[in-house]
Length: 182
Image (cartoon, rainbow, N blue to C red; front, side, top):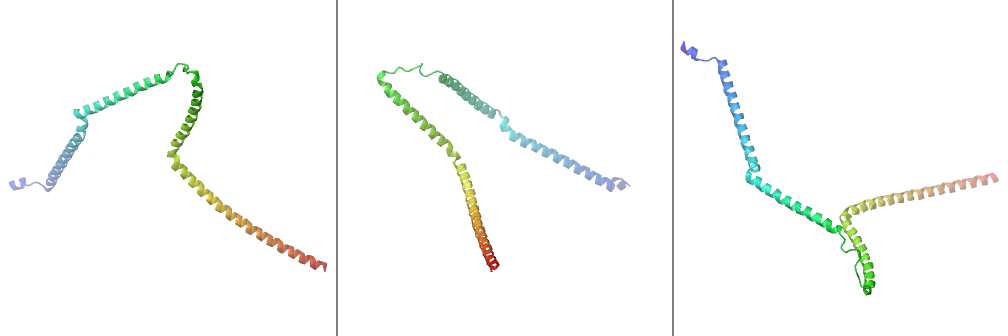
């Protein structure tokens, strides 16, 4: 009789097995969450570590000082450019006036040439695009030329046909005229 009471029913055996499986799954999920937390801590440890934060702070301070220096230089440069280099006129001795006039014409010519050269240099990066556009235009022109030649040939053949038809009609008219005369 004791043996019968010690034995569990098969439905309870399955229930305990299902409970054990659920407990094991919960434990596995708990361990996987813990490992994910550890991996995340490892990945972010470098970012939040005080050593790396101080390095980044120092780099930002150096960059800030550099930018402040650039702004200061920009202000002083702007102020210097606003001031005229000389007052209103340069005192030049009368014997050098002729040379100054020649120098000014040479300076103007030099500045014009310099501007032309600068424009040429600025247009250098656009050369491949310009060449591509020219190649496309040349291809279109070649296509139009071939189409024009074909149309010209068609017009000439049509003209020859019209002349032949006109010639045949004039012969027929001449024959009919001669038959009427007789």
